[in-house]
Length: 410
View 1 (cartoon, helix red, strand yellow):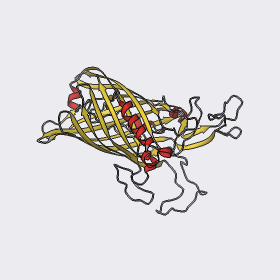
View 2 (spheres, rainbow, N blue to C red):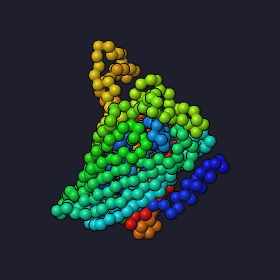
View 3 (cartoon, helix red, strand yellow):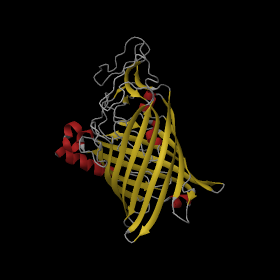
View 4 (tube, rainbow, N blue to C red):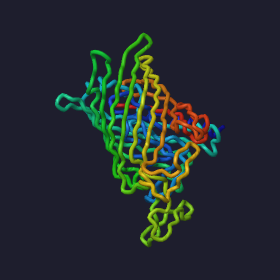
């Protein structure tokens, strides 16, 4: 319990003086997810709202060599464009009327619920720094917002990688959106903001996966109105992305030639063993080819200083095909659900991201956020629907985390 108290106090103290980041797709953006054991999913940062977290991905060492990581012990970030704080929860109409350079910075701290199960075995506390410069300008009467998102994380607790590396840079995302370019003022009051993004592979994980880039497209529809109990913002978005890799397999390269330096742990033990002339010594599965997400969010502007928000995202992922086509030698049996045990084409997976929190506006530039975030599969292994906003069945996996953030925007 003493370790728990220390972790919680550290989270609160280290967040003081920190700053936040903003989503540029013209709508109300989700809060940041904790930067868990990094994953190689280029679509995660490129989506308007959400990611495709993957339970097993490689973790790179400072030298560039990697080994497959264990199952992720905390949920992965749904997006590098984070924020549902009062500082930058601007409506698309407000963004469309702005011009010039803005810089939004954030320092998030995330505490996994596994810390409360067994702080010695499952503790998770991570800091996440994001810097996002953006330029708002007009071209032939159309308002545009161009941005760059830079992020890095530092884990205070024991990291889930062979070398104990605590710092992890994330991929850089370049984005362009047209806030509220389409508006229906007469009938529905709905505004539509299209957006696009390009991912630059700057993380160890993307280097290991052979990521070249990821391209994304999306659109968000928003509707804001005022009631006697405060203002409400409703947001619905749809986005998709395509990742490009040098190899469809996300694997650990073999190291059997004289020019290759084997990966070793802190005690000097070789952690990757390779057969002569093999291409991969281990694999973390196939790389993500396509990803599609559907997301919704509601903001309640309770007062001029307080915003309460809740959001839910469903993510569908298609991975590169391990076996493009089946032949006569393929297994003909079916599993317990009646599906063929041998399948060709893209592999598929589903994931949900849900959050609930509140933001308090300190002044014109700063705001605080506090909330819970959960990233997990929508169904259990037996086909039962999971409660999306909290992971009751696997607390030690840190699928649910508490976050605390202080944001600044200038």
